Image (cartoon, rainbow, N blue to C red; front, top):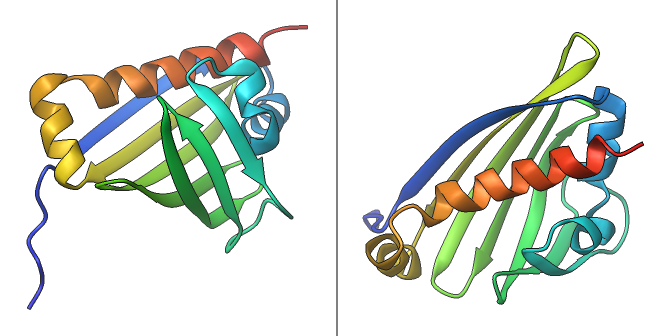
Length: 144
């Protein structure tokens, strides 16, 4: 018998970044430097190679998260899943060349009892979080 999910949220977003895919990818895939350019992340640590099966730990919004990379298609796609107190999430990232820049699109799905509470107290928290991530990635990647 499958346990029904509750408190499920999904956010799908995309943003054009005026930088080549290679640069945008390099910024995004360097997990150990996330906290240097993303103000919502206070810690991020990947021990080892950025590859499927690798585990990384990070703090976002004061919450400790443990994630595992599921899929990497170099320069094109990243999928990871993670868990934190009362939350499970799966995050997909896509990088596509558009002219001289990059379109980054992302899909995140979260579920759990904490997600249910947060969706009541802060109904747009996931959308806002993804918007902030994309904007910070854009800001960092577009710097000379």
